[in-house]
Image (cartoon, rainbow, N blue to C red; front, side, top):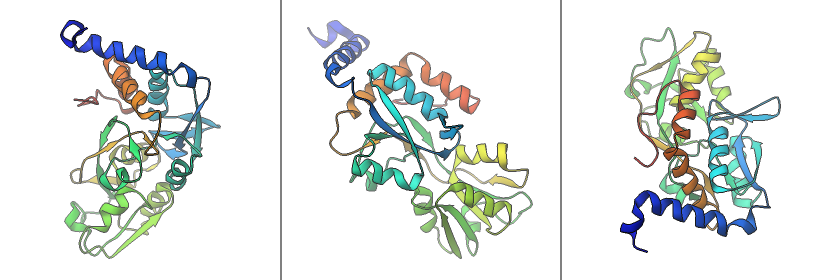
Length: 256
C-alpha cells in the first residue's frame, strides 16, 4: 500500500497501531519513570503523590503508547545517575535537550519550550538585564542548564549553586543574593505561590530551551514515547493540559 493511498494521518495511525501491537510482550512490565520531587508546576510530590504538568502529560503519553509505568520521585541531582545506572528507564523532569547531554543520553522529541529568566528583589531597580548582573551575586540550581548559562555571563561576582532551586529562591527573598537565574515557568509559579511579593522577574527571556523525556542511549522506549507525544498533540490532550497548568493556550505545539 502506498503512502499516497493511506495519507499522512492514516499512515501515522497505522504505524501507531503496529507499534502498540508489537509491544504487547513488554507491557506486562512496569517502566520506571523518574520525576523530580520539587519542580513546580512540572513535577512535584504532594502527600506522597506525583503531581504536575509533566506527570499528567506522561500519563496521557503512556496511555497512547500502551506503557505500564511506575513514577519514581527523586531529587534533581539524582536523576542523571538514575538513568545511567538503570534505576529508572526514563525520566520526565524538565530535562533540557542540548548537545552535551545528547552525547550521554537519548531524548524524545521536544514536548515543551521554555527559557531562562532573571529574578531579583521587588525593590531592586539596578538589575534589569543580563548586563546588569556584572559585579552581582547570582544563585541557581547546581547541575542545571541555568548554572551553565550563568557561568558564561561576564563579570558576575559569584555564582552560588544549590541542590534545590527552592534554596536559591529563599536566598533571594532574604536578600543574601542579588539575583536568581532559572526556568521561566518555575519562576512564575514561585512568585505566585511563595514569593510573598518580595521577588520579581526582570528583562526578556535569556534563551530558549526545549524539554524532552530522557533515557539511556540504547533503549526500547523513546520511539513509542515520540508516537505518544504526537498522539496527545493531535487529539487535543496536550493543549488542554497546558491550559490547565499554565493558564493559557500554548503559543506553539510540539512538532510545529
